[in-house]
Every structure is written in structure tokens, then in C-alpha cells.
Image (tube, rainbow, N blue to C red; front, side, top):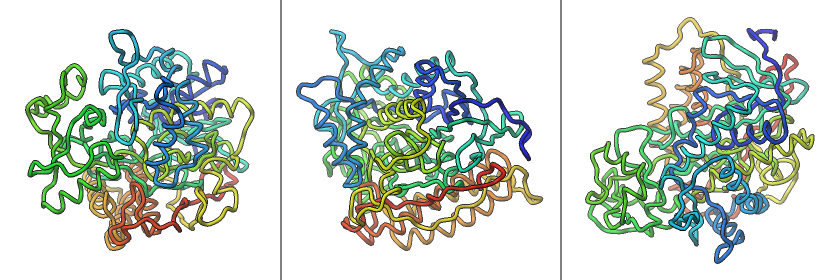
Length: 549
């Protein structure tokens, strides 16, 4: 028994928190290849992750001619707007093809042509076709299916519907997590190593492609524990989310534009190169919508052949919305899609806290820089999830000065790529297990969440300024106070959303430039002085009771 936990569960070698591609691929590798005792903890079901919603495919050089890993690296660096760590991107592009083959070996079925060869698509920011898909635009669902089946065969313990509250810390290193199970028990899940693979925080915004579960829980846990977090101001907005009341917003895959779909404004005019990186397209759309006083643009896919056969998932989604892409232009608007930053890691996925690892969207590996290249997300999760396991197997217990961690552990020149500016930032304490006497009602919590999301979309969305960020700060403070009064999953998620929002605002206020997915209307140009990471936290907590402070 722990001092105030209800129960302590049997220790595992590796506890994976989250059930997306990064966490599950790591869990399978650790259990199946290395025989480690693995636990997986997720607040929903194994299948409920952002990975499942991913329509875009996996970018990997699977045919050397005319493509090459050097070209994939160059495209990734170009999209990252000067903030990618070259050595991290090199790891991604070199090891990516092997991880795709691992998925195929697990049973993932990617689209092939009549000759049995993998079909390769081109997406925005890529110079050549190198994207493999499944079911046209159901790649994430197919990857998740294969990994879930493998985890169910190999994991020693699977904790579904368990909400991770905070990290357990003993002797200056991560020792597990404190969680609340579906039946209300508080449990300490002990582990020699903890991998936070909890995904992003798209639900910080009112318009997002992310599922309801994407509330930035892992990043919030890390921030409360003083673990280094960076690049959270770089939230990628996907330009072609269907403009529709449904939430999360249905995503109209990058592959549509790769196959020739056109972007038009509400007058019918084309106004941007459809194959530019996502940040550039989203900015162009937002500015055009503001100029015209409208809330959407159009995606014209009427010229695409065999739409239903190529993109059956999208076809079904559009039919449910009463749209036929063979005759209708499709209403679209940018939606929050991907957090480019997160928990700072080295090339093995080690965080600033020994024993704590991160991979996938929750991590800042240095791969994405200021803007993620299309279809690099699933690949990053597979590559760095595997590297975490290999490092654990080698006996690694703390971070090295590699990748994005280089700027945290080493003193580098202020203008060097990856150099860090450490900022004092104190998030709220750990999540309460008992509500206060004036606990908020469900309606009050829902209203606070909606208020936060709308404020963030308006004040810290595609376009930002000092005034809009300051106004949004006030709303985040109000919402934080509401969340602090409750002790149930809805208020814990609200608290985590508020922590993520506060961190984003702090970094966005400090970055006095426009770069990648961060656009300041009052600082419209890139500034060489900001060719560096802005890091929040970074100190190592040392709570004697094994608690995250």
C-alpha cells in the first residue's frame, strides 16, 4: 500500500501510458522481442487513440529510385522551418522503412497495386510519392488494429478506462503513475520505466480533428513534475478539415490534394499552391477567409477519378454529411491537428527525468521542428517507440545530450539550432483526488471547457498577437480555478487542458516572431534570434513521498 493510494499494483518493467502507435509499438517490441513485463494503461479502450483517426499514411522511403532518405530528410527539414534536429530526422528517415516492415510483419495491410507492389502517394511538402496508405484513408485504423491485437497477445497487464493522475517519483526518478480505475479505486501502478505516449492536446481548441480523449494528459503530468517540455507553441492546423458541426472535425486527407484536388475561396478562385506544407496552406486560408468575411473555403475534388474506390472512408464520411465529392465542392476550414512539441527527449526517447520516456505526439524529439511534414507522425511514433525499448534493454536510465535534449543538457550558442531558453514556469500542483465542497456541476465543467476551447481558437489559433494571447490568458486562469474544485475525469481533463493552454500561451507570448505553425500578426517575420527551443520546466522533482510535486 502507498501512503495515500488505495492500492499498489505489481511492478512492471515498462509501463506504457497511452494506446496510440508509439505506445503500442513499444509495448509489442518490449514484450515480444525482449521478454519484458509490460503494462499498458489508457483512459479509454486500447482502440481509442488519435492514431485510429489518422487518414494520412506513413512516409517512408521503401523504393530507392528515384527517392532517397536524403530527399525525405530534406523535405522534413524544409517543413520544420529551421527548428528540426538534423540527427533526429536522420534517425527517422533511416530507421523508418524497417519499422514499416515490422508493421507489415504484424499483419498491417497497406494498399497495393495489381502487381502486389505498395502504392505510394504524394502529399504536401513531399517532393516525391513516398506515402503508404491503408484503405485509401484508413491508415491509422489499420495500424491500430494490428498493434492492438499484438498487445492483447503479449502484454502482462492492460489497464483500460484508467485515468493517470500524476507521476510517481522515488529517489529522483520516475517510478510509475498514480491512476484512478473505472470503479473509482486509486492505484499506484509501479514500474522500473514509464513511457508517456499519451498523444496530443487538440481538444484545447474548439475546432479540431482530434478525438475527445486528446487532452494533453501526458504533457500536463510532465509539467507538474518539472520535466522539460518544449515547442508547445507549434500547433499544426490541418487546412482541410470538413467545415461541419460534427466533432472531431472529419479530416479530408492530404492525399486528396496529392491526387489533384484544388483549393478555392468562396468566389471559386484558386489562391494557394495545394502542395505547400500545412502551415502555409492554413495561413493562406485563414487570411483569405478574413479578407472575404467567411468561415470556410472549398476543396474541389470533382476532378478525381474513382473517388469511392480510392478513398472509401472519406466517401462514407462525406455521405453521412450529405455531400458527394464527385459533384459537390467540399466546405473546409483549418482545424487543430497536431502538437509539434511536447516532452523533450533525446534520440532514445529519454526525458529530463531518469526512468521517464516519451514518444509520439506527446514528445519533442526534434523531428518536427516548427511544423510537421505530412505523414511523418505515425512514422515518428514507430521509430522512437522502438528506440525507447532498445535503450531500456541496454540499461539506459537517463538522458544524453542528443536530439532535442542537447539544448537542455548542454550550453550552446544562443542562435544554434536546438539551443534552449529555460523559462521559469510553475504549473498547478497534482490533480486532486477529492472534490472541494463547492465542486462544479457537469454543466459548469462543460461550459468551462467550451469557454477555454473557444478562447484558444480565437486568441491562440492560426493567427496570434500579444493582445489576443493576453486576453486568452485571463480565460485560462478562470478555467483553471473551475477545474481545481473537482475530482473526476471531466475536471481532470479540464485541468490538463488548462495546463497545456497555459504552457502554449507562455511560449507563444515569448516567441516574438512567426515561424512554422506559430504566426504572430504583430511579429510577422522570422527572427534568427529565435532559432532555438523555448523550454518550460526542466528541473528534477525530488518528493520524499514518491509523489509528483
